[in-house]
Length: 179
Ligand code: VGL
Ligand code: ZN
Image (tube, rainbow, N blue to C red; front, side, top):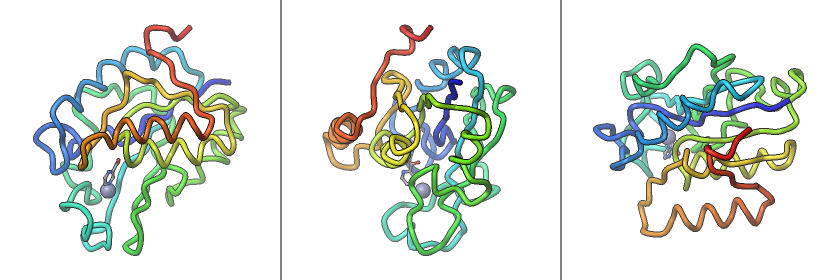
C-alpha cells in the first residue's frame, strides 16, 4: 500500500506567511495533481502553542487555530484521511510529523498496511527532512522532488537536507514519473 504524507502546506510557510519563502506555494499544484495515485493520503500541520521555546529560533508562526496554521487555500483536502498535529509542545521544536501528538503516525500507517511512504511539502530543510529521517526507519520512503521547498535560512540548507535524506536511504522521484 502506498501513502502520501503532505507535510505542513500551511499559510505561514507560503508567500505572505511568517516564514513564507517565494515559490513555496508552487508545491500546491504538484501535490494536488498526484493525490489520486495513493491508497492513503495524510497530512501534518505545524501546530504550536502561543508560547514555545520554538519561537526563540523562529518568528511566531503556525499558532494553533490561527489563519497562518490553516492549509494553503488551494490545497485539495478532500482526500486527506487524517491530519497529524506536531510541534504542539512548548519545550522542543517538534519538527518531525512522527512526533505528532494528535495520533500515532507510524501506527496509523501500519494499520492501513502502508509499506511505501511518499513525502511532499514544506519545508525541505526542517520538517520534511526530520520527517523523512524518521520515516526511513519504518517505511520505504520516497520524496517527491518537485513537491518540496526550503526555508533556506542559510543559503544551501535545502541542498544539504536533500543530501542528508539520500544518505539516510530515502529515494527521490519527480511527480511526473509516478505510476
Ligand atoms: C518548519 C520551521 C519552523 C517546517 C516548522 O514545517 O518545516 N520550519 N517550524
Ligand atoms: Zn514551527
